[in-house]
Length: 77
Image 1 (cartoon, rainbow, N blue to C red):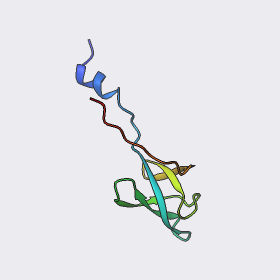
Image 2: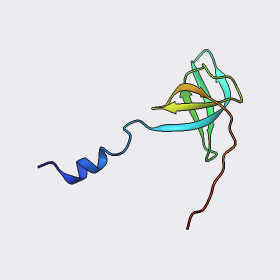
Image 3: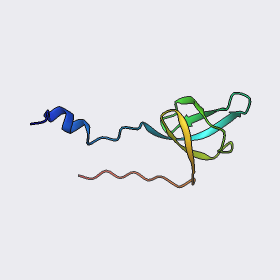
C-alpha cells in the first residue's frame, strides 16, 4: 500500500509555472527580467519573448509567448 501523502503530492504539477510580462532583455547573459502577475520581478533564462509581451515561465526559464488577454475574477458563493 502506497503512502497517502505521496499520492496526494502526485496530484500537483511537478513544474513551477508562472505568467509574467517581459520588462527587459539581456542578450549577452541570455536572460530576461519579468514581472509576474503578483507584481514581483524575476530574472529568468531566455530571450525569445519581446519586451512588453507576456510569457509562460517553467522552472525559471521562458517557455513560450502568451497572448495579452483581459483577466476577470468572480466570487462564487
